[in-house]
Image 1 (cartoon, rainbow, N blue to C red):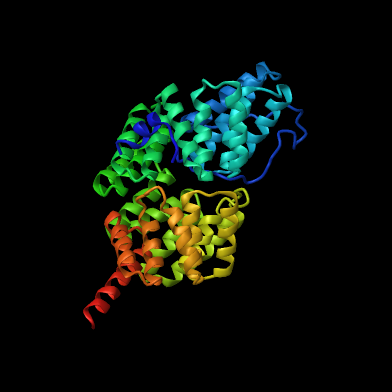
Image 2: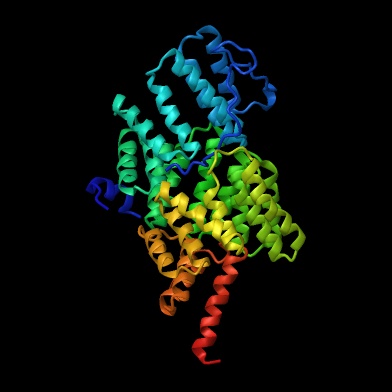
Amino acid sequence: MKTTRTALAFLLGAAFFAAAYLGVRSITRATSDGQAPGEFEETHVDARAATAADLRIRAAEGQLKQRPQNPDGYNLLAAAYMQKARETGDFGFNAKAEAALDESARVAPDDYDALKLHAKLLLTYHRFAEALAAARRAQAQRPEDHDVYGAITDACVELGDYECAVEAAQRMVDLRPDAASYARVSYLRSLHGDREGAVEAMLVAVKAADPRDPESVAWYRAHLGDELLNAGRREEAEREYERALAVFPDYHVALAAQARARLAAGDYTAAASLFERAQGRVPLPDTAAALGDVYAKLGRAEDARRQYELVEFIERTAGAAPGTYSRQLALFWADHDIKLDEALAVARRERESRADIFTEDALAWCLYKKGQLAEARDSIERALRLGTRDARMLYHAGMIYTALGDARKGGDYLRRALEINPGFDALQSEAARQSLASRAIKGSGV
């Protein structure tokens, strides 16, 4: 990686805001019910139940009443709707944000804040190349605004341009070392295999988080827990998940994270209960697949079947932008040895638009399941190019190299996967152990 010495020293030496990208349910324009341009239906929320996003929506609506031809109110409303989408998992709020930004563009076509927000919204739609282009246009207007470098970092990470991501994150933290910039530093350190450095940076992000925004605080806490879990510090991770839920109760991100921690501990009953709660809050294909696997592990075959059916149903009906869950769906099919031709086709299409390591990993796994081992090896090597310590990715590498006949390399990857997280997946972690046991039996001549 050709990166400045300063950036490498800060980001990678010691050891992204990994935003939960949300899709779109439908594009509901502000004028759809006979409203005039610039008019938005006023939001009514019980004051006792109002969240930070609700309060910001109200404030923006009040500003729009007073100054309907000023873009600031529309921009504030768009940002508040995007925050509400994160709070609730309701993709429809992103559609409302887009409508607000359309109105902002109508009254002020070259408004900087609208352009920056549009870049962030494109990220939620998984239109990463377009998001990067929009963020670059915003950067050209105001190169000293640290916030725009967050969108650049996120887009570059998803496109697999890690040199760009490191440089943008470094610039962001140089301009303003806040929670958002340190979260991106943490994620980049994690991607480059520096787990302790990732934990260190996320701790700073947690301390810098704005207590007036409980969802954001909970997000930082939950992702600190994820980094702790991946560093083998499960008990500390679970404490962070509890703190996240104390700040923002029933937060689906923290509930699913707690479930993964219980999997790592081998507590499948608790994991099932937590996945059920997360799924009840925000139905997601990942959660349905994980819950189905836990049910399968517990011998609840019919419950598992119903969850597996939900994976594709949610992907079709949840309202996310087309392709949002493509990678997850391809991995689900490959994990369960179903629709393998379709899984490979989906993974190849995904790889055409983004070259990040996790897309390479998904493609490698689908190629392996189709028996295309040489190509699978090439793809998994690209996935491993940063030295990322991801248990699932290392498991995939282990199975691929074992199938290629390289028992030593395959076994090494499988052991590393289980060392990082012995319960990284309810079913696949057991497959890793069985593969290692089979190698041991063959090696003993039994």
